[in-house]
Amino acid sequence: MPANIIDGKRLAQEIRDEIGRGVKALETQTGVCPGLAVVLVGEDPASTVYVKNKKKACEAAGLYVADHHLSAKMSQTELLQLIQQLNGDHKVHGILVQLPLPAHVESHVILNAVSPDKDADGFHPYNVGRLVEGAPVFVPCTPKGIIRMIESTGEPVAGKRAVVVGRSNIVGKPVATLLLHQHATVTICHSRTRDLPALCREADILVAAIGKSRFIKGDMVKDGAIVIDVGINRLDDGRLVGDVDFDQVRERAGWISPVPGGVGPMTIAMLLANTLEGARRTAR
Ligand code: NDP
Image (cartoon, rainbow, N blue to C red):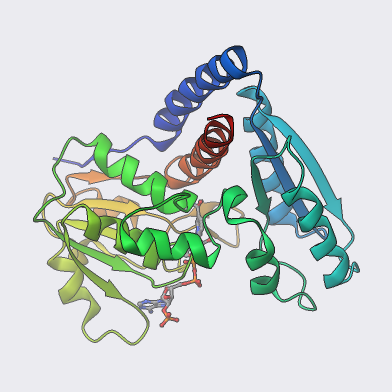
């Protein structure tokens, strides 16, 4: 029987509706309207689309958006000054710096300058440390969305074998950490892992965050596994596909998330959730 689909688009809409209600309630009770500052540097086409979608989702949920679109030629010092200004802006509860930044800007310097209290992406070292410690403040959006998707299956995580393919700071490592906190037995794989297919076949939960089209094949998946596809890859004909060979894997898996319509919409929903949580903490 083909796998059940984890419909990230539908789940994200439910969460965004819930956030919309939370925004209204917070405003009514405290007068605080949650605000997200969106910083885009340059004209990268993919980043421009991501930022547009994030702003649209914020506005639909009633959040205030402070939009900062800067020239790719701006200096690192100017960008740092903007971040300092946003750190002190009481209308802003979350700051999103869209990556990648231009080559002349050191991304880690910029991300480290964002106040940990407004770090809606959860990339600041303080928030990374809190996450590892098991007492997170801001959880990075994509990993947080992935956990919500796994929870939506109703399958318990504790005791399961989880394999995360990819060890980036923004997806692989934090999602592995979150799964560990939920008592999964976690293996993190990467480009130097030996016999990746055999490790993947052991997974009750398989998360693919690699950036290679349809890399995970049907024979790499255990029968009944939960498979979360994080990858976003554009084919030559313009179509978007994930890191998982959807047609093959859906014949083996118990649950599978599609691309598009899977992790992507959940990432945006979690950005809104983090901004609302930031605003609630301020209003306390
Ligand atoms: P990175 O390029 O930072 O990391 C990719 C990881 O995959 C690395 O750890 C790399 O290993 C590993 N890898 C590459 N090739 C292989 C291989 N042959 N076998 C095993 N592991 C391999 O990517 P990100 O984590 O930033 O993103 C991953 C994918 O997810 C991309 O397609 C990206 O577009 C997408 N993405 C989607 C988001 C969403 O909202 N849906 C959000 C963020 C990302 P090594 O470390 O050894 O190099």
